[in-house]
Image (cartoon, rainbow, N blue to C red; front, side):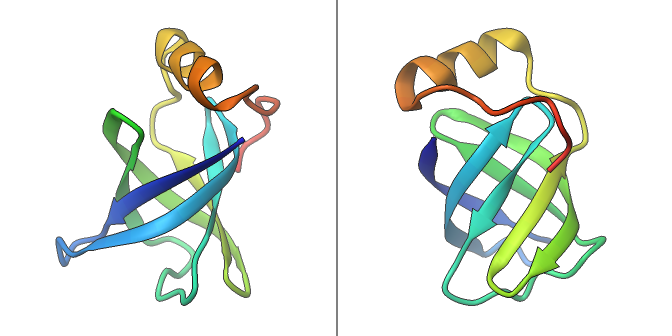
Length: 93
């Protein structure tokens, strides 16, 4: 599953990212640059869902793993799976 999404940090500026490895508890972001650091809080919008409060849990180059502060509601996860494909396992991002 890959979704073109937006996130915002405290600055309020929106950043476009590619989302993959989506589960109810988090996802991985791919971007052309990354100012996100481990521990940084952000909000992300997935399709029509969001903003979702999240935190950066890991970073490897331009890949960033985020954890949603509250897992996606099952109906939201079902919507995303129907639109973009199967969600990943429940492991944290």
